[in-house]
Amino acid sequence: MRIHPAVLIGGTWLVLGASEVLADNTPKEEPSSREAVQEAIASSGYAVPSVRLVRDDGKVVSLAEEMNDGRPVVLNFIYTSCGSICPLMSAVFAQFERKLGADRDKVHLMSISTDPEQDTPARLREYARKFQPGPEWQHYTGTIEASLATQRAFDVYRGEKMSHTPVTLLRAAPGRPWVRIDGFVTPDKLLEQYREALATR
Image (cartoon, rainbow, N blue to C red; front, side, top):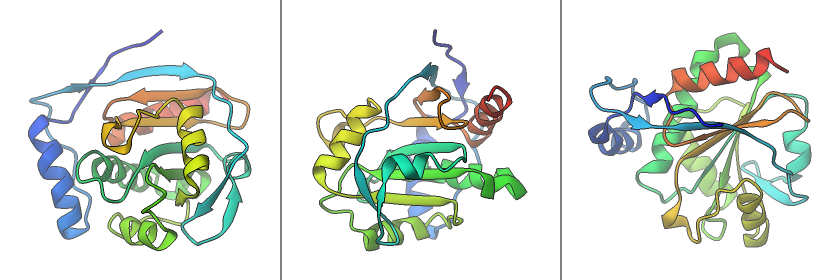
């Protein structure tokens, strides 16, 4: 069953907000609610594929092990040359991370590249610096095969990178269902969904 609450992100801000993040390296505050984009929230079961990815520190890791270390996981898919959707989703992650405060080290934020041919670990680190991530937020690349397997496992593959749509997934603990948020989500809404998921684990 899906519900459709309003997301407080205006169409104009989507364009300006993304470019501002890239321009001054500081995620902006949430916009006003004069315009709204809708999100869809659903609970889903996904099987984490048995693939190995390359983390932004250059280490080759098992995706399943990265996701099953006991911490809640918040996941999105980005690529570094994206000029609109991806910087906005990353800005949301950055603000969400700040809103967690002292609890930020209890969650694992994961951003997986959908353009592994271009997104080397060094390029991911350069991209990530714009959003001032803490150590609990990591970016991943890998082989084309591993990237596609992961995208398909989480139903975010749309044929090629330019056709991607904003999707955020979160899971309170290994073995718990994933909460899938299709569409743009504000940091406050993401924090609300995160806390609801933790309350039911």
